[in-house]
Picture (spheres, rainbow, N blue to C red):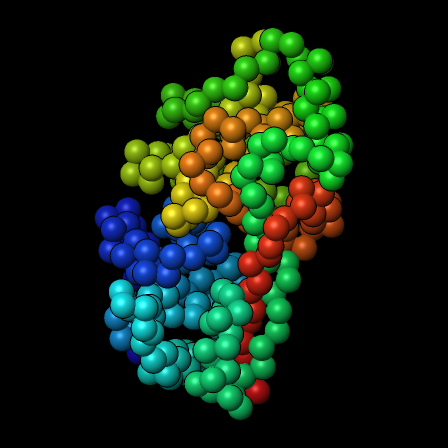
Length: 303
């Protein structure tokens, strides 16, 4: 039986060693992501054949597993994943659950098919595709395709001439949570997911010095009306973990998006703004920023 371990702050460097091998643009490949969602998703990890496996279990759903993380060698070669998958299948059998394996790009899907050509049914996990954009495009918002975004920013500046961008620090934690709580009012139909996000934000903010992310905000008349947090994923890509605004502040989403990239992330090429979770409004909003590519994800189950 696999040994399932808790994701704790003292394991950050240990887990990061595996994540760095992958050099992935996948939004889930940061220790911060695993740590802040560890309670809502009962996030565990196991080491199999010197590779990392993440095993989440959301509410009453089944425990699932990630494709091996860290199968790449420094010289560019890859390790066989057969023993890893065999151990996973044994784990699912012993625990009485049907195997459910998350594949985080097309390459890993092809590796699984090559090693196990007749064993799995693989389906696209569209709701969890990551949206990836060019930072220079979302900073400059040039050209016809970004015309409406530019208008939102111009309107924001006109409506709120005393606005300012600010780099956030742990001293702003209470302001961020107050803004989040104001934003969530009236969203009862999303109560469970909002509660989980609130818990994740609290975990995130309470571990500021250990996780090492960057936060940015907008103020209007001195009041915080938007906040966002991000961190590097790999050499050319950053990820945005959270972004919330005062719903009464027109254009704040567009403005904080643009300002955060302009002030903090000009040394990077791409920004991953995570998935849309299948929410129609969120999908429309993310598509409106014209991603340069999507990071496709898949789910594998036994035939």
